[in-house]
Amino acid sequence: MNTAHTNVLETERIPRLLFSYSIPAIVGMIIVAFNQIISGIYIGYGVGHLGLAAMAVTFPVINLIMAFCQLVAVGCAALCSIELGRKDYEKAGSMLGHSVLLEAITSIGVGFLFWVFLDPMLLFFGASADTLELARDFMLPLLIFAPLSFLMLGFNFFARATGYPKTAMGTAIFSSLGIVIFTPVFIFWLGWGMAGAGLAQIAGQAMSIIWLVWHFFRKTTLIHFQKGIWKLRLRSVKRIVSVGMAPFLINFCACIVVVVINRELLLYGGDISVGAYGIVNRLVMLFGLSVVGLGQGMQPIIGYNFGANRPDRVRLTLRYGLMAGTAVTLLGMLGALLVPGLFVRMFTDYGPLVEASEHALRLSGMLFVFVGPQIIIGTYFQSVGQAKIASLISMLRQMLFLVPALIVLPLFLGLDGVWISLPLADFLGFLVASLILFGSLRAEDNPCGKTDFTCKPPSDFFKPRHF
Image (cartoon, rainbow, N blue to C red; front, side, top):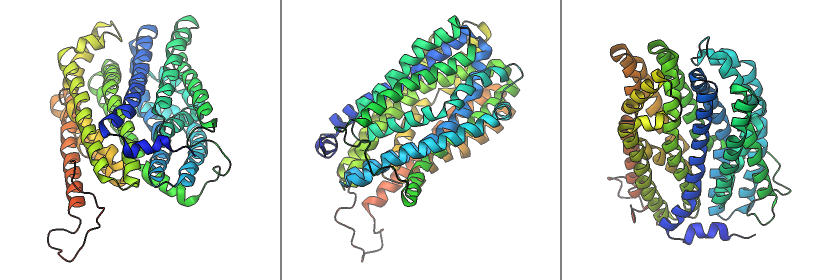
């Protein structure tokens, strides 16, 4: 087996390694964000401002779908990286089989269940009489073809985890091509409206699946399709779910948050405010997903070196990741504060929606700089198998800070209270994540505690050599 793809994870200089792994991942995430922006532009001008509001209503459903998808995808990819670091290629290969089988099973169940209860879900998530049908039209293709979404994301995480970041970037490129090519055809030429926007996303996913399946069929690929990997083992499934629980809870909490946001916006501002959130959310995704891409580039480096018992390289990767992630979200914050109109007018020229969106972007993005380090800290704990801590960081930010703020602040500040809740939670979540990280690193540096002089820490325990 050719192990050159993984050996560099242990020998290459961290800055160069992080650059080579993260840039394709970041480009891929930026393309994903641009996909949503382009789709939103077509919907804004092809369907209208109610189409943008309907898209905002579908965010919780999509977050729930992604929660179940990442429960498997992230768990399999993270465990594969760790096993590669331990040089256990048989266990690493088995994770590919588990990923495919579990994604297929989960997607069929989730797609059917959500299809049955789609209308009640959309109404609960903030749909109005004017936006329910539009939201339903968009979601139906995504639910019917849910296995494509699940398998695409699973393969994508696995390609990156096994040392092929450019292959993962290709996934985003093909998906983007599908959306760019088919969305205007389906919406403007064929007149399929919101259903056309959903079908265009499916077309892009189908193109990506072909690309990824070809990659994993090649025998020269480090981990590829072969006999012996198509068996589900209960012990492995439990480990996968344990590690994947962090992103699952993150997306599940995000679903709850978006539901509360949509319902509060509908109460205090109507469909216009819900549409403004649809625009703001897409713009925030551009910078947030860039940091997620950075984290995806970090994950195989941290996971491999953690498995290979190289804590110095783990710490150094974390350090560079924190600096880069903070820089990205600082740029996003400056854009939201200084030129909000430049971004908003890409989606619509409807005066009331433009005005509402600019105001919302300024308020919600004023502390966005603190989002970047939170994402990186969560990725670090996830990559070293500390799924519970990664989950805790996300849940505290969203459930302990954001949801109560969304309920309380609008009582005093009205609609502005909804928007101000977001930066307040960003800042408080950053403080908690930083304290947890600092405490964890201190505990690793001093595993015996201050008073236990009889304890002899292992010689290979994490040491603060580079951080």
